[in-house]
Length: 69
Image (cartoon, rainbow, N blue to C red; front, side, top):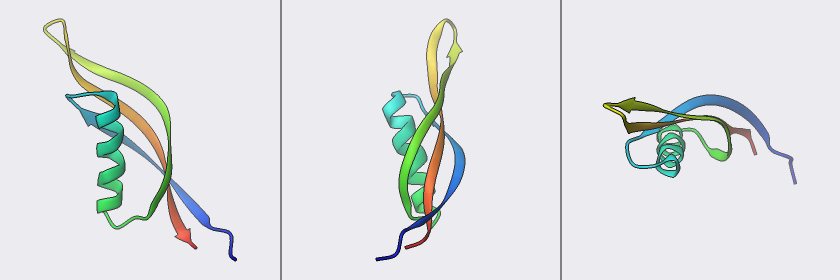
């Protein structure tokens, strides 16, 4: 059995719905780009405010993509 090797990408997922949705959208976009995503870690959470209300959630993620199985 070969131990996997990973590359880390830093991305920012966004959503007007929730933090969880921002994470899911970021991971899905990375996977859609042809990467094999194995894990993620949340580095930072923040958001945009408009007219005194939360407008958008922003989550900075490190995403582990498989380089070799």
